[in-house]
Image (tube, rainbow, N blue to C red):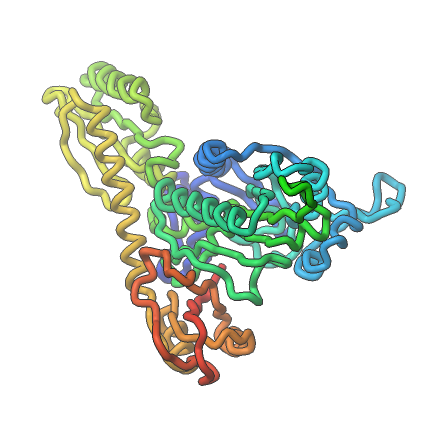
Length: 491
């Protein structure tokens, strides 16, 4: 196969989204499959995207009192068993270390599926007085959950990268404010950095994080009609504080249990990014996260080469000086068409084309990656003009995803309507629900869809307009409904 042929995407996003997604991830040089089933190798371009998410979140965390730390990869079995709901919730997914070298260990070590059980004991040591609270920690790490069978890079792997924050507070309300603050920051990351609108709500009680008081969630709708759990923020109540004796002496000189939270976002956000915006030409990236925001492609003949390259180099230099991430593709061995295809495949948001005409007129031709829209602009204001075009590209991507979301939230008032709507359209089905897990199970068994969220009581989400209200019966069993459920297939 020639390089030109191998460069292109051969699968269709509309007709074979799974195969298309895998091809984009590989050909855009984001990841490869590891020799062990369920694992991937993250390539520099893919890891660079994760670093942009990390830096964006880290700045928000730091501004709100969070400090980064690091805890061991391994958790003693006795620590894990201190919180029985954690054990029950994760037991089928835990990978265990039983030997060190040739020696059998006295106690098995769990490869962390999450870190509450190793972090909470240290919170117990570090918290003594009300003056120590709130205590806010975060770590960037990988976790292992031995449940992935069919690997989908970034969406579903046995090992994945994430951040997990852990905090301790004096009061329930302080922990709830913390829970919502982190959900706000995750929402900002999705909408501002990734140009992806999200729904926000909470998980039904039977689907909460093991031991949690409340689990809040962000959900993003993919073009194939499936939902992605984009991030979760858990109000843990006093469950872990009681299990691990996280207590403090208050001003009344009495000992009180703390209220704790945990919250996390994984590289599943990268899967959502790729799936949401990319197309049959390859990866599409919003400018704020793109490793190269602009690629400058000079186009010359032998007699114009020197002046075109000098002009293009000056444009690239001005953009770099202005803080724009720019790449000058002045390779002599590749023609402009090949370069266009390669940078489109890699998702660069904006292309600047420079030929003899642009040089003569002191102009630039700018081309948007998402839709091929082009504009001729003055060379004089290249940095300002580039920023404006990047903002326009980000807005285009967000609007397209927001339109997809708005068009794919549908109401259903019966079991058959739920099944038929999801079966035909995918997306979210909004329906009155009695709160009984058995009703969700009935839908899940029929069509592999589940309740991905229920709105907050105050419905604090700009995308959840028109939530069913008033007297209603559960669409599945006919009993009195107590809340609105959003059903969807998910990743």
